[in-house]
Length: 216
Image 1 (cartoon, rainbow, N blue to C red):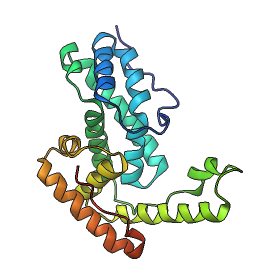
Image 2 (cartoon, helix red, strand yellow):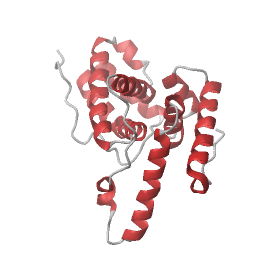
Image 3 (cartoon, rainbow, N blue to C red):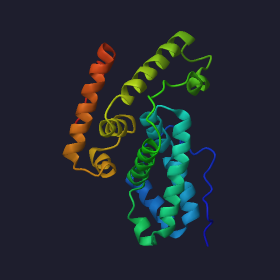
């Protein structure tokens, strides 16, 4: 008998900075979910928590909102998994499935309140990276400013283009995976990404010279 509410690990946001997993790992994960829901769910959070949090942070522009919506995403995921048969759990593509839930959670959150402008990234989010052996404060300030500019520009993109660009270029997802999350053909996703990158280049000007589509 499963717990009514899942135990979401405290460190669900961090998975050693890795935002993608290989098919073999996904197969082991879905098999674990099929055999042991609670144990498999803990592994699901461990492996994909960082990708979910990064995605939500980039589409909302707020670390606090990303945390709140991430928790809601995994709660909904657990409730859905409880109703799935073992066979259906084995057929899941975990990352795309979770980001589909995260996208719906985010869209529902937007509908429930007046849309707020995307906020700039907080300096505190990067303070733990200020090591003595790393870049100096001036360089870090420059990097943080770049992230703030990108976050603000992303917030000005249409919803579909924003999510497509984040999944494709922040999380490194394939067009097929993004199409699965967006619920549209691959060709549509390519157009969304292309329009999004073009808009970012126009918004950021010379700062966006490095932004280009990767045709893979």
